[in-house]
Amino acid sequence: MVSANRLTTLNAKPLAGIRILDMSRVLAGPFAAQVLADLGAEVIKIEQPGKGDVTRRWGPPFHSDDAGRETGTAAYYYCANRGKKSVTVNLAVSAGQEIIRKLAVASDVLLENFRTDKLAEYGLDYSTLQQHNPQLVYCSITGFGHTGPYRERPGYDLLIQAMAGVMSVTGSADGPPLRAGISIADLSAGLFAVIAIQGALLERERSGLGQHIDLSLFDAQTAMLANQAAHYLVGGEVPGRLGSQHPNIVPYQAFATSEGYIILAIASDEQFARFAAVAGAAELARDERFATNAARVRNRAATVSAVGDLLKQRPGAEWIELLSAASIPAGPINNIAEVFDNPQVKARDMCLELSDPVTGPVQLPGSPLHYSRSDSSAATTPPPAMGADTDSVLSDLLGLDKERLTALRDKGVI
Image 1 (cartoon, rainbow, N blue to C red):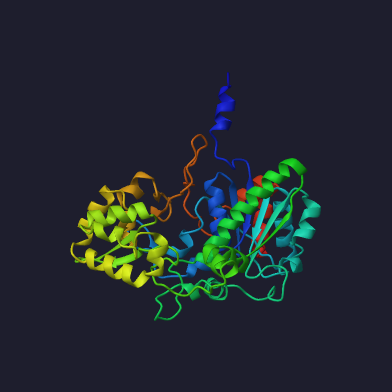
Image 2 (tube, helix red, strand yellow; image 1 turned 90 degrees about the vertical axis):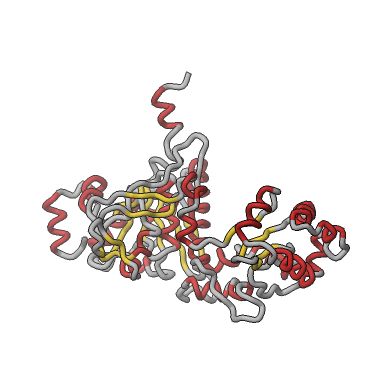
């Protein structure tokens, strides 16, 4: 029989008991740290006194309190910082550097996205900190990594999307290269960071040692090219822009109907045959130009034209109902408001309302991670006010009393 205490442990969040020192800013690192917080880790966000994470000022829009008054914190900051504690420390002074070293000793993971070698100037690089805490997992996220000819270049999402090829395959064939509508380079790097950190923590169980993770936005985005990269590396073809079309599957794109646009994502010959039957054109599936996906790819223009003519005969909502009933992948192109009003989003708890006693409630996207046994609820504390937890964290972890905290604050250390 399993004891009650053991059951509590079995049902805990997967990373309960793990402490993350989040020294990252903007999106890639903070997003990674937020996912780790959702998984149950204690995340301590380090911010510059008086300034904090630069995204606190990346507005409008800004968060508003219950009375509709702007709180001064940008909505952008809220997207990647829930479930954390905020501690303000001045890294430019020796006393601040010593605080970080002590916090690193008390932590399992340090996550940072400073310019390559910048933290070495403060004695806060991996080679220094691992001497104080050999079990520390130290994850560095940079634009281009700690090696290679671009190692000292700054990295920004737009720049990485361009240099790593994403913009060359995004947009219509006759239009300019486009940035993806979300910061896909930052977000993919953040997710790779979560994977790498969890892998290092698992390996630490065997070796008893931490290690350095050198992760770059450029590497992460290059890895995410996936099938587009394979087209060139394996097939010798340089992919181009196809709008919403898929390079290997037809029909798989947005289509105009008599009322609005819908997405049709037919990935098999059986689905195409069912589509043709529902559309009252069963003969299309018997036409040698359209009978197989390979034929439809070779005859892309003719396939798209034939399917497009059929879809223009009914409104989009009617098509979605008919096609979904026949298990044919089709759906609307929702705007963001429609996404969060969607019953599936509500059923899966993908919209959280978090309560902040100072600034009032805030709604944020939920966590997509769902476990059968472990607690998989998203972190429930809202993104912290700048420095809100400085005193409690430094008191609890470093034993600093009120008098010492006051002295450090008076000197601009915290």
